[in-house]
Length: 616
Image (tube, rainbow, N blue to C red; front, side, top):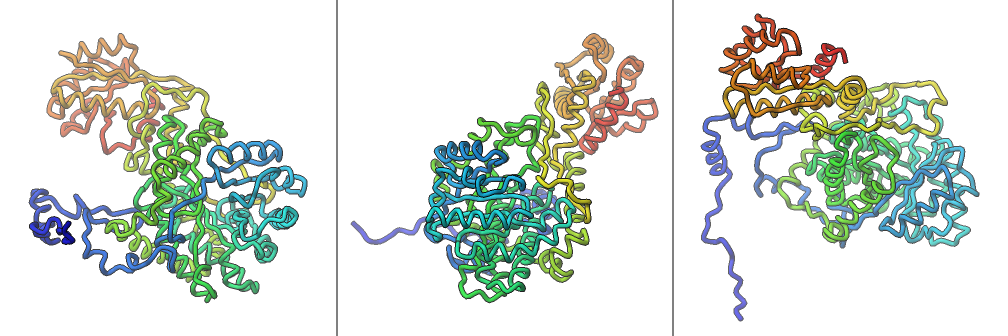
């Protein structure tokens, strides 16, 4: 057998970048390359339509190795395994314990207990952790910041009483007073003094973290990826400064900080975000001169977003959270929570929680995502995104630091103003369908009813115990405006919208489909048709069907012929709408036609206007 290895494709000459560009320009037929093919991201940089090896040769990220500083390629060298986490509301210790034991037999190896502050006690923890082998899984706890130190002391005593190997205990306490300031406007400044005490309490447990950065809250408030990234870094640095200034060793301080980050629907950008976050956090911690590079590792628990989840067509949430889970796990996170698909409108039930667990298990056990370290490494596109996010995220970090740090920025309301402005912009974009929400503002299920579903909002266990001292972030799901409109329509009166299709076959079908999709976003009953020979025939059919709205669907050229006669024949017996924005629009408006639906419409405002005209 020959030892010579044949090099494949040697007979082909590799095209240059310029040759690619020349070919693209020919295919564009004179169209502007930058306008047609270059994507201007929300993160503040451009993405080209293609990348080549030469584009990443100048980057430093491909030179990194897995498990080595700056950890852009992950904290592990030999696998990509993550903890499959499920959060449990622990207001009843025995019930939460029973649920935990049940899910541990169903693939979960990380538990997150949320304990009301007034429940924190030694007896409660004894009951909660009964028969749970804490050395074998990850255990995480969240409670009111005012009870976190007490909880830490109880847990330390419990672990020592059980004789657990401190090296084997993995977990966290979600102590993050700054999040109270940012998200709720509550003055939790005095609780920051407990941070060094928490670290001292748990200093002998090397893998048990007790200071949290909850930037997933920013994600769920609509923050762009780069905003979550930059603010998370500044947030974490605030805690590093606080701890080290209190005399805590840099290695110990860094080893006690955990990041809880969100995952949005932007697949490759989110994958790059976690790689970037590890790299930049390592650089930040390095400035504190830790004795070991391992202290520079960023430990991230990722949670799939609630911001883009929907109440209507809620099974689409499964598609959203699955791609988000893929982004996070491929990026090498420490643990993952998949938000159940029914979370927007009810407390998740056994079915939705089982599906959420299985979404992770499918990736781990069937797709083997845990077997390959940093599979995105070397991808020209992902390496470019990683570098670009690092540049833009670092700008935000530096700006916050120059203005006095994250705590100062939060107290002044600067962080809240930025995130609220982004949220408002995204809602405005969704209203105009510049940002699509499948099943809500685009391709809604025409026949679906809410069936009593109402949006639910989580409340903090200490909600309302103090006056608001600072600005707060308004967390509103992107679909909420359309959902509220649709539910209001359903509960008041569901109008019938009849498509009067006439003239050019292709145009009338396309515009009828567009109009049905448009009006169904508010829950209207839509009736499509195959076409009518005359507008009079169409109007008669619409009135016979009980139409509240008659939508004329034809071509731009034919509207000059059909629109005014149809409008006059209808004679106010129903609302008249023209599908499109024809050249003769001004003439139609002069004749009294005032309603048009087209791609430049603000869908939400137009539907609100129609509801008002219909008395809904």
